[in-house]
Amino acid sequence: MTMQQNSRKSLRCLLAASGTGPNRFLFDGTTRVDLQAPPEIAARRGTLDHMRDRSVLLALDSQLDCAVALIELDGIARRVVICPPDLPPNHISSVLDGCEVDTVICDRMLPEYSGRNILHPSKLTESQTIRHDGCRLTEWTLFTSGTTGQPKTVVHSLESLSGHLPAGSPSGTVPVWSTFYDIRRYGGLQMLLRALVGGGSLVLSNPHESPGAFLSRAGACGVTHILGTPSHWRRALMTGEAGKISPVYIRLSGEVADQTILDRLREMYPHATIAHAFASTEAGVAFEVQDGQSGFPANLVDSVGSETELRVIDSSLRIRSPRLAKRYLSGSTSGLMDEHGFIDTGDIVELRGDRYYFVGRKEGVINIGGQKVHPEEVEAVINRHPGVELSFVKSRRSPITGAIIAAEVVMKSQVVPACRGSLPTQAAGLTNLIEEILVMCRAALPAHKVPATIRIVPALDIAPSGKLARPRA
Image 1 (cartoon, rainbow, N blue to C red):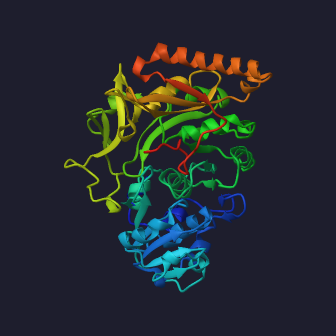
Image 2: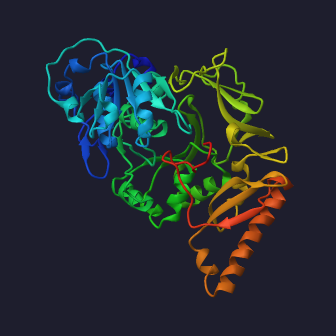
Image 3: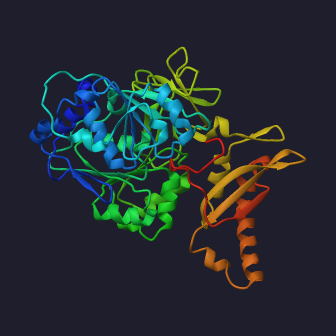
């Protein structure tokens, strides 16, 4: 049974139907919330009449408080706006106006909230008089990832977010989900809904934890299913704690999953299903690939009779499905879909044989003397070097071609000591590594895509979304 059969039920009703009890929980490293038995949930349901039909902004420091607020408000509030933790204060006023927010649930006051009804999250769970009336269809409003300038928000429903998820879990099993993502972003929210609707538990990430500490805690909690971006996983595999988890299922999304990271995860977790999925805040989850290969089968495109339809137009992947967001709510004057109901994802793909491969984002292309270069395509080649942990490719200004390709590379920890010693020895070691990387690039890429410069760096910037921080991504 899928959530689509229960499209007018609230998240709380679906949670109760999925089978609750003392073995199910939400945990953020500090506080554990047990998902109570159905009678206790019903007793706490309350009317929350003061929240009925309101447009509510959730601006909370705690992911756990946000999860509880979503359970309480769905089916009551007219709209719930899920605010990410890194929303710049100078954009708050425009978001409040664009989303018609009349109530802010927050644990710290900001001047920008003045004029709105302010509520502390603890007020949501106070026992109130029970009223058995029907649920309304609450709009779930999310911020799109990868935007610069004015943030965009899109409208989903509980059905569009989780209609593809199975309700309940097999008898006697309680999957323990976890994710490097924050649940206030689409990828993390998917894991929360999988746990709540699918009969499991969820171990939340904590921004104050190192990747190694998070993995240790996830292992101690018995995590069985875990999700992150390829950048999350590369950082995780750099730690000595990657072996602290024994998952049966690993999923990558949010960035191009190249063959190198898929192979490394298979080597580290030989008994786990290693999957990578295409999903975005606007388009929802389009497909998942479990064959261990990068890219996706070409027969998924233009497939007849499929619930999720894929097209490739001008090399850009387009999607139409019941999982699409309904519309932009704020921050955009353009339409979300084309005249046929497809969303242009902006992800560029290339057909090679019987498989499509992601090569980069439409807006991230670098122009080198009139020729296009996608940074992700070059990074995938650099990452094949056995000593490379992570790489980042960008453009650098050139008086001749206008721009050149520059790469920054993080080496694996066991490689760096080999380059230490006297300054001449260290310089020679790094020079040899860089030359090896260049040889690989020259063999695999056209000349205009080969980096003109390569710099070894100790670390790379990771955006709050878990992706490599790119100027336009």
